[in-house]
Amino acid sequence: MKKSSKILTTLILTLVLMSGCAGSQPNPDLVLGGLDLEEAVNGMISRIHQVMGTVNNLDSAKKADAELKLVSMNLDDLIFNSQKLNMEGQTALSMVMLNKVPDINTLINQVKTSPAIEEILGETLVGIRDKMNSLI
Image (cartoon, rainbow, N blue to C red; front, side, top):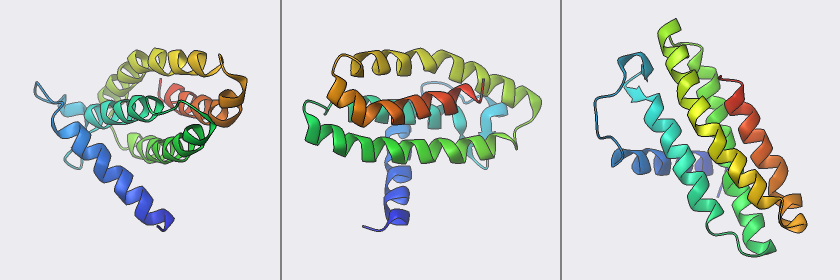
């Protein structure tokens, strides 16, 4: 599968995961081009947890790393597009990220319990956290 196809597949999967998550009206300051960025973030975090739930050995960690790198690329898109938000939207997105970073910190700490798995996943997870922090 080509890299662009994987990115599109991941984006579609993220949107599908998000579709059942909305219980309230989206914050209008976080809607960009019809996409609710808070739900996009929630979908990415859900995907990260789903992927991490499959890690039980080195082979599964390698597969998870590839999936996490796709999520990281989606975060790159979010960072780029967040610049289009008004000040209220950027503040709201900052608060969303502030609430989600502890989830990633927990995953990083769990990965540290296995040096071999940390070697595979640690850099990617820290990169995801750093990208999230850049929006705070």
